[in-house]
Every structure is written in structure tokens, then in C-alpha cells.
Amino acid sequence: MRLIVINEIVNVTIGNINHKLGDISTILYFCQMINWKNIPLLRFSIIKPNWTKSSNVSFFTLGFLFVFLFTRGNSFSQNPVWLIPANPSAITDLKSKVEKKGIEIRSESEWLQCISINLPAKFDLKRFCLENNCIAKPVLKLKSTSLSMIENTHLDVTIEQMNGAAFIREGLTGLGVKIGVTDAGYMYLDDSVRTSSLSQLWSSNQILSSHDFVTKMDTIAYHETYYTGRDSNYKERKNWLRQFRKELKLIYHSHGTEVLKMIAGIDSSGENQMGLAPNASYYLTRTEDGVKEFKEEEDYYIAALEWMHKQGVRVVNTSLGYGRGRKIKGSNYSPLEMNGSSMIAKAVHIASTQKNMLIVVAAGNDGDKRKWKVISTPADAEGALTVGSVLARFQKIGYSGVGPEYNTYLKPDVCAYSYQGTSLSAPAVCGFAACLLEANPSLSATELKRLIVRSSHLYPYGNNFIGYGVPLANRSLQLLEYPDWKFNNTREVHLKERSLKLDTVDVSIPTLTIFHKKNDVHLLKQEVISRDKKTNSFIVCPPKDAKRTTVQVGYFIYELFWD
Image (cartoon, rainbow, N blue to C red; front, side):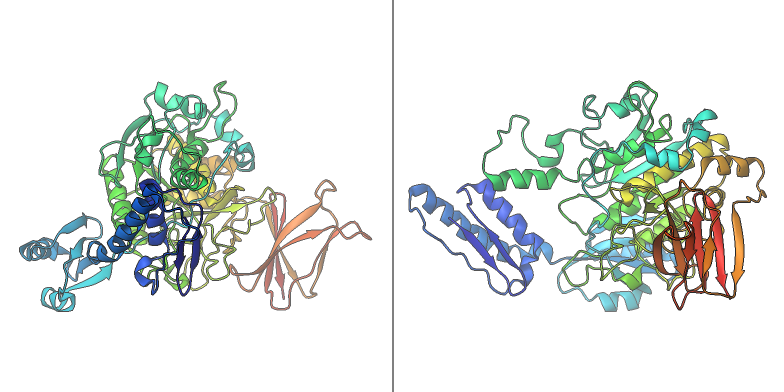
């Protein structure tokens, strides 16, 4: 039997379907993924049917589920919104009025002084807001655009690029620092074979607390059946569609485990580190379901930040980002909204500037998406330490999100090596921050962020591709001891001609990554140049509209002004 779902916009064909309820639930899931509410025509077609008894039963089940799809709309009809009182002190009174109307309060944010509610059918929201002096903002059905398949997080080059050896020589390992992680799942974290690099977290009792905001559980489980809902003795069928469904459900649920490796990973011999904070204490939260999308996820993230603050967490890693991806009207952000205006960005900014928590956020993986390109939220929060991804020679990798030009502040702030998404760049910097807090626990979140930015190799010549560059451990330790220290790795050159010949560069360097800018921070383009074959030197020639060009020669920086 073959089921064909026909949409005016999307054509989806699922073939060779086994006549069992389990596969029908997969079809149901796919229908939801393509936004079944807007499907004008759903046609079931039987091709060469085998009219056995089991086939008749299966076809009956299909018909039943077809009706079920279009009659279950009421469960999705509620429109959750944030209610934000004009006067924050009126939040208690607003809650009372909401409860008197029998409306469910989904969650409350102490920081944002607002509540989220499920609107009942035919509720006059506009009138309610006018009468109660509040504004309503929809709770978005978020879809993470930063999650990606991660394999083999053994990225020693990241530590080497950040000169992490300087921390290791000083014996800095994040000891005594509380790190929070919010992610989509931590599957296999307790598996000593699959994740031996994190075994010290168990042997030393370094995971102090955890909470799953998706399932409302006080702790996070790490086994496969927790995420799939299957019994442990589930026998896998040979049908390819069922196998695909299994992979689809598991693909993101070990994302948090891989992220943890980049913060705390260390091999069993104790000689090879993946992360810079193997001895920190950890608080784990789950706020994202990697497969299904819920409007509650915006609630979850804000609640997780507030929960971690109560636990005394000082550094939080967020390798999640929200932007494009939803097809449902009203559930998408637009690139112009990546300006710190989302509810989760506001919560991150409050955490960073008022609650003494450094929130390290991945810049997002949509830098090469033509209709997006910019960072995602909450990476757009001004107070966040936003981290992009670069290659070994400090070249922004294509997927890394670009900082919007319409903001008054620069994003991303810094960057780190990764070839598997900004999800792994952020935790590398998170471990970096923990080492600095161990060295000086009195640093405020704002001071810590500024210290990391100032220690980065491009500082003070940042750009909206890679921020101020890669933070360097040796420089950060020097700044801890001498806060006003000026580094001598930069040189400004003012030129009247539109080219520059660099013939003093070490012959072992085959290429240079340069940034042509139309002003002090916004890039026209990134370029990789090779040596001129005739002169064996590098010749820098800017585009017509370039005002400045940043040239990276290893960790030495030339800032060229095209006068």
C-alpha cells in the first residue's frame, strides 16, 4: 500500500508502508511537520492493494486517523500569549484577574515580570488588555536552527587555537565554578563506553542537579527509552521507514552530551582534554525537544535560566538558537527581529547584566542561508557572549551566523574553531570562562565577558563575521594580573594607494584570511589570499567600497585604512 499526501505547496510521498499502527503514527507525525492545518487537499490513494483482512483493517485505521487529524484541531486551537503589565508591580493583580476568568497560567517569569497563558476560545484579548493595562505578545512555537548532527567531538585544535595550555599549566580546570547547560538531551551521558571522556563527572559527583522542563521531571534521564518511549526490549523491524523514524527521534537527543564534552571532556588517561573545565560542577537542564516543537519551549528556556540562577550557576552554555524554520504563520521570527527583542533574548540580557550570570550562546548555523544569514536568538541579546565558528586560520566558516548591521552593538562577540556547528564553539568558550572564574571568583559577569573579549586576537578590530576573534588564555591571564595591559600584536597602516604588499610574512604561512570592511565593524567580504607567484609576497587589494581591511598574520593583526 502507498500513501500519498498532496499539498498545493508541498508534495510528500511515503512508500512501502507496513500495515501497522506504528507506521501510521509516523505518517501522523509527518503530516504535522508539513503543517496539516493548511493542507487544502489530503488524498489517500491505494496502488495495487492486496485486499487481505489485515489490509482492510489498515485501511480502516488510515481512514480513522484521517478523520482524527482534522477533528483534533481544538487541541491546537489555543493561542498561548505572554501578558506583560505596563506596571511590573501589577503582576500579582494581573494573575488574580486571569485566574478569576478560569484561564490557565502556563508559567510566570520573575525576571520579565510577566505570565504566559492559554487563551480560551472566543476570548476578547484586546479588550482584556485595555481593561487591565497590559500588552500581549504571542508565545512562539520555536524550532531550534542550531541543532545539528554531531559526531566525534575530539577537537584538540580548539584548545590549541585558544592557547588553552596556558590554563592547564596554571592548573585551572574550572574547579569550584558552577556551570549550567541547557540543551535538547543528554542521551548516553551515563554510558561509560560511549562517553568515557565524561566519566569523571560521575566518579566525582560533579553533576549536582538537573531538571527536564520538557517532561516536568526533577531529573534528566540518559537512556534511549527515555527519549523514544519504547520498552527496553523493543525489537526493531526491518522496515526502512521505521528505522528512519527511530533515527529521526534520536538524532538530537545526545546533542547535550556532545556539548558537555567540549566543556568538560577528558580522556581516560587524563592526558588529553577536549574541554577546559573538566573539574567544574554542572547543572543540566533540558528545554528543547529536538524532534517535536512546542509553544511551551519559550517558557521552558526562560524558566531554566531562572532555575539555574537559584542554584548559584555563574556560567551557562546555550548551544540552541531560534530563528527560521517554522511554516506556521506567526511562529517565525524574521531576520530583522534578531535585535534582542525576543522574550528569551530579554531573559538572557537580564541574566547577563543583572543576575551576574555569563550566558555563552552559539551564534547559530544559518550564516550560509540566503534568506537568513544573521545570528539567531538569544545570540542577539546584547549582554550575551555570542560565539561564532572559524577554521584553523581564523576564517569564518560558512554556516556561522553573521551579526546584523542594524544593531548598535557588535555580534558575534568572539569565535572558536569548529567544523560541526557553532554548537561546539560556544561550549569551548564556556570552559574558557570557567577557568577565568576559578582564577578570580570575584569577577562579575560583565567583567568576565569584557575580559574574554579583550583577550581575543583581533581586539580592538572586531567585525560582524567573527567578532573580536579567538580568545587567548595567555592574554586573559595577563589581563587578570594587569587589567590595563596593552598588547603589541596590532599595527595600524594608513594608505593612499589601493594596495599593500606584505613581504615580511613568514614563508611557512601559505595563505592569509583578510576582512574588507565598509566601516569599523561591518564587512563587505571575507577573503583568503595566497602568495603572489612572482614576488612570493602577499598583495592586499581592497574592493571599491572598502574603507578598512583587517589582515591576520597568525596572531598579529594589521588594520589597513584606505585613505
